[in-house]
Image (cartoon, rainbow, N blue to C red; front, side, top):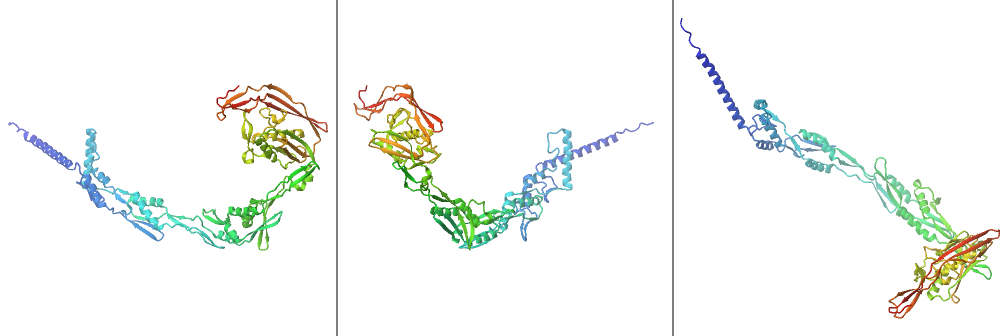
Length: 626
């Protein structure tokens, strides 16, 4: 038997086969590596945008290619329409463009979504990603990958285009007008306008631009109403107003006075006012300029009005008769507001307000408007002297001022003169301030010594308190209720017995009393400058009462302080001048007793607190003083 031959040749074949496969795999890997190295920064073959091939181009080259081919953007035209007008606008007219850089980036990303896009994954994941990338690259080369353009449009450019179109479409509304030439009235009603709503129109265009498709878009147009639409009613009212014939009639104390309101005057009064309607428009209506009407009425009032004057009275004590120095005058006043309302009601009857006293009536072709007149009766009526009850002296008061300085006397005379003809009605309060007014230079008063604070010094009106004190005494002995009265700060020699003085300081400190007699009172001053005496007489009808006063009660006496010496540079050396005089302080109570015929008795206590007053001396520099 012979041996079988060895099987080595079959083993060599498998080795060769495996070596061949390894060589092929190495060649494939080398080829793949070369391919990836070649397209490392370039778009893979088969990728395009809107038919533009981008394979083998870098991102920037791809962006340039897209930009070159799609600028201007070859999109479809968009047509804007309003009525029978149209505006055809290309994409470039509307500011449309492609985002070339974004498109190039999307093209470059094809085949780079897996292992080639992320180097931080695991080996298994990287192999999986590599398989996906190679598949995408093969698909692009075999079937092709195409991207639609990414559209961008400039809002500002679109806004500008719409603004230009709107300028051709917009139409401002025409306002209603009314004109008056002389007494002729004419007018024209308003007409609506239109305005493109650019925001809404832009919103309608945007979807077509974003889709890159053309189409027709109707402009969004809104109606614009004029502020004044209808003037027809205003024309009718204005013509009716200017056709009126009016006269303002006032029945006064001097008879009837007429004030014609002619068409020219009515023309000057005519006013046009806007009235909103329910549809939002405004309608003009004819009305009156009430300020002009009021001016007309006020001019009439100047001719009609006259003040009421009280009679100026005196009393003759020898005959117990009232003497009329100046008769009274009844006044009258035109009610301006009521007259304006009456004119308004006559001219615009459908818009008349509630009546305030005036009225109108037709008189032939002329319409009469009644102007209300108010009659003002004087408080002191010279036609009713007998009814006043001024028949006798009720009371009087007297004080003395002999030795007063010339300025003080002048103030006393001036203040007393203010009371000439003063009449106090039944139940009325007498006010010294009301009768005399401000104690000022403008009211005729001059500088003299007055009490101010804790000093006697020079001031306007020194001596007026002599008058108020005298009036107080007349009111005291008349038994009149004293409403307001203030004593002086210290006892003043001019006023006699302490407790019977009345200080005034206008307007804060007044002297007032009440006329409770039921009849009028006449206050009559009497000044004797030679004797230095002032008396106030109160005339009327004596009430059935007797007035008495108990002896004054003095308490809390306090001696005057030691004299005060003060240097005054305006005085020469050796000169001493006294400017204040010492007075003891004290409290004084005066009791007034009023006894009535029916047995009633009323007591009033008047308490005066006087401060101790210091003598004050001024001396020149270098003067020896006590």
